[in-house]
Amino acid sequence: MKFIKLIVISLAVLLALVTVMGLFFPATTVVSRAIDIKSEKSIIKNETFRLENWGNWLPVQDSSFKPVMEKDDLLLNETRISLISITDSTIVTKWKRGTNKLISTFALIGHDKDLYTLHWQMVETVGWKPWQRFGTMFNDKILGPTMEKGLMNIKERCEDKTPSHD
Image (tube, rainbow, N blue to C red; front, side, top):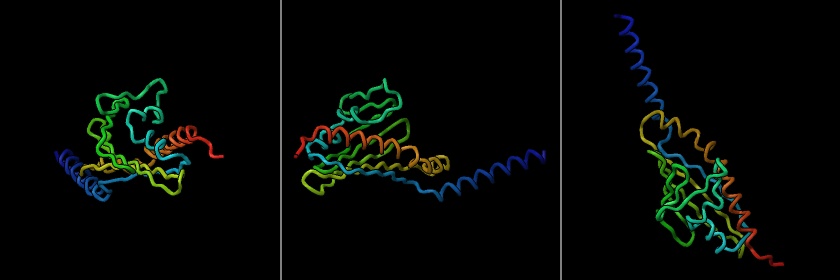
């Protein structure tokens, strides 16, 4: 009986310790990437500010899978992407998969007549549970490469559509 009591107390202390350690991790994580694109603003906006065009450049694991529009949302496998707001230089979307939610923002920053920086950030806010907090440690490693590939796809598509000024 003493052995069982020791195991129960040890597990409770371990759970409390892991929970306290988890609270030291941030509840909100941001992954951000940017790329310079030499193209017209209207071409870049057409690719990034219209959800129906995202299927042209969003990297997907299975090449036979294509994102589809459902009403005003884009369905990407089990992820639903919904438009939150749009301005002349930003688009904000919510990505929802199960209970996970991310807020994605594209910001278009002009430098020159046909030189723009496209900045993409993904923000995830989680609760107090330790496994949620520990899971956010991997966001940059998981989301970062996919975001980089998506930005490269956008750059290629936009620069290919831009008429030469030579």
